[in-house]
Image 1: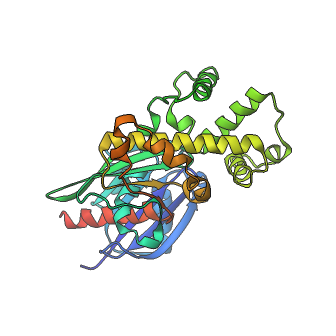
Image 2: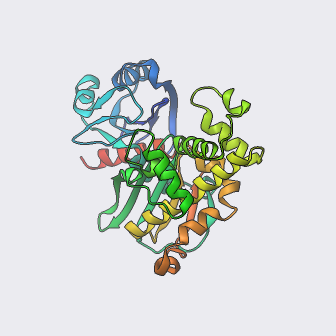
Image 3: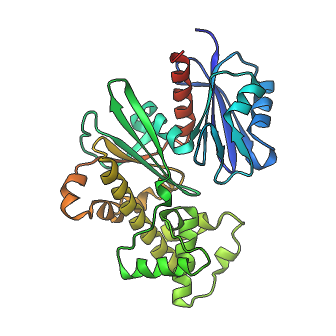
Length: 329
């Protein structure tokens, strides 16, 4: 079959597009656009296709935000995306939108051993569900199940469930956040880039400490990276404590997701944060919290846990989904 599949990983900062052959394994060309510099996805795709003309078999786009009836307003995007409008504008019949974690989950089976770093290496249960949790700008979750027709990916907005404190300190954190103007305190608010900033601000406020010069000098939007780096270097005691607390919360919620979907096929950590803090994840706080599930501790302790190192997983997943659109017709 001639023609190519257009895949996209569309985030609040960058929109990454690529053309794949019908097998959807290796991109022939990839372009990255600044999302805020464009009025919508249609404009970006038109610019991409003008620079890279192609006969398209299908198109699939992973977007940060819930997708309902082919429409989404990205969580960190200023514009709405409508699949029907894109089909008409671009003249592509087989075109679908996916939640970004759904796209990431489709990408898991395309990854090789070098794309993964094991935190706990054990044998997955054949045919068992696979869970994905990704801390980045926000906190995303998804999972795969397997049936007679093959894998099926389920999107989720589990990052927005209620944060459940496990200690007096975490209860203080929840109450501090609830008193800051938004009563609902989700896991995303304590386990993500924004979550790390929130935790650090809470600990600093609790200690009555001034804002350090290194944080004041961080560029807007780079505060989480600065806190993470200071925590990894252990150059700031509060940043060190904040990173440890977030890692523990990350492990606890990953364990919650693993139990919810019975992820005996494996737990994967995607997103941009986990690869940058692998050394802290491997110190043990993550896995201790992951396994601290009472009577279910022994069960969850058998689940393999891996960090996804390949930052193209969502793009590869969107391409894989696009090839399924081609095969379905």
